[in-house]
Amino acid sequence: MLADYGYVLLFVINGAVFAGITLLVAWMLRPNRPSPEKLSTYECGEDPVGNAWIQFNNRFYVIALMFLIFEVEVVLLFPWAIVFQSMGWYAFWAMIVFVSLIFVGFLYELGKGDLQWDKPQPVTPRYVEGVGVIIPDWKDEMAGNGNGWPDSGTNREAIPAQAAAAEVPPEEDGGSR
Image (cartoon, rainbow, N blue to C red; front, side, top):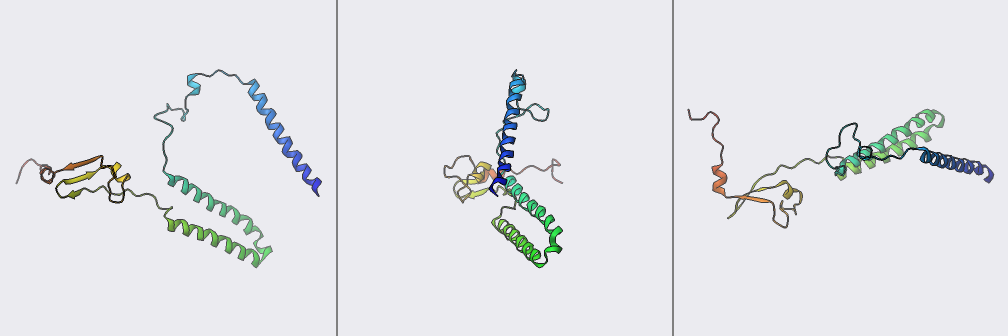
């Protein structure tokens, strides 16, 4: 019984040795002539623009993981459909339990709000007594501490109430009728 696993071990060792020898021979035979053109970032034939280290929204990652979970569920449904008749009610109830667990996970993710995309909140000016109308910057909205303003109080633009009322745009037709 244990000797049967020896064949598997031999195949794994043989595969690792073959891969190692192949990589070693390729490393020895390849030309090594680096140049600025070869070392630059390749973006589908276009010249790179900007920094490659940009921050992506984490929602992309969460949505991709959820897609993989449901894709694996579909992959597991195909073999079940093939053996369903031969296994009878056991296969039916086993798949009901499996699908219900996946559905409970889906409801959990939905309730947590991970499947809802971030919706931008409108930036609305506030009137502060004695200061005037305050128009928050988008940085203020992102770094807010619950009241819409960061603790440091930077990046604010205060407009007196009279100036805000005076900035009404003139009529487009150039005069009154």
